[in-house]
Amino acid sequence: MPISWISTYFRQPWSHTGLDLPAGCGTPIVAPASGTVVVAGWVDNFGGYMTYLNQDNGYQTRFAHQIGTPPVSYGQWVPAGAVIGYVGNTGMSFGCHVHYEVLSGGSFVDPTPFI
Image (tube, rainbow, N blue to C red):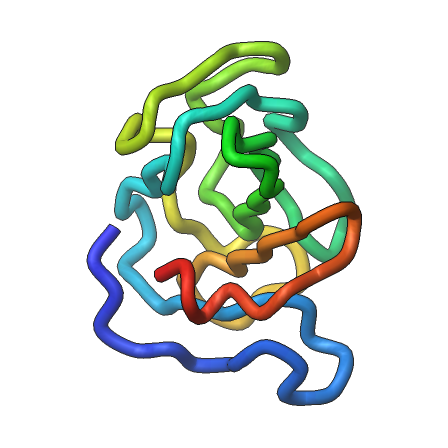
């Protein structure tokens, strides 16, 4: 998805584990790299509908607040650029955006270099 601005940065406020990327509800979210889907659906009241992708390069990426059930399934391998969800406003969200997280070795890292 094209990124025009970031509304909330990594660790700002201090506990924020990703980036908030505003976009119109329904905007496609694409896989930043090839990998295997390990979560696709409703996760909790914070993230709402989410996709977790274990990328072939060793990172895990997560995409929260999607409009509904993602169009991918657990265990599905997807190539880079494949649509893995759609921007929404589910969970603890105050407007259409995707909350984007990157993990390395189970720890959150700043996603800014990856966009």
